[in-house]
Length: 107
Image 1 (cartoon, rainbow, N blue to C red):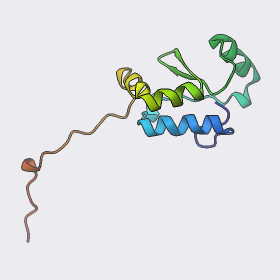
Image 2: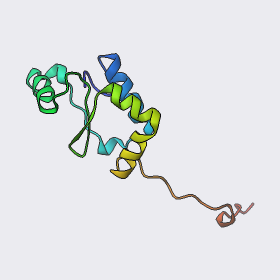
Image 3: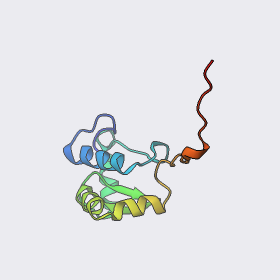
Image 4: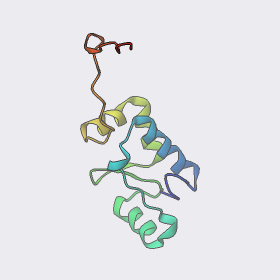
C-alpha cells in the first residue's frame, strides 16, 4: 500500500484499509508494507503480480487484486467468503444465552 494502515497516502489505499476493517479482518493476521519507502518493493510487487496498481491484496500469499477488485468483491459478498474461509477475521466471541445469565445478588 501507499503509506500505512494508520496513515494511508492515497485514496485507494485508504479505501482498501477501510473495506478490510469493515469486513472484520484480524489485525494480527494482517501485514501492510509501505511501497513509498521502498522503490524496489514498489516495482517488484507490480512485476510479481502482473498488476499495475497499488494497493494489492494478497490472502495466504495468493494475489486477490487491487482496490477496484476488493471493492467489487466486498459488494458482492465474495470478499467476506474469501476472508472467512482463510481464517482472516477476528474470532467471534461465544454468545451467552440469556438463560445462563444469573442476576447479581443485592447486598
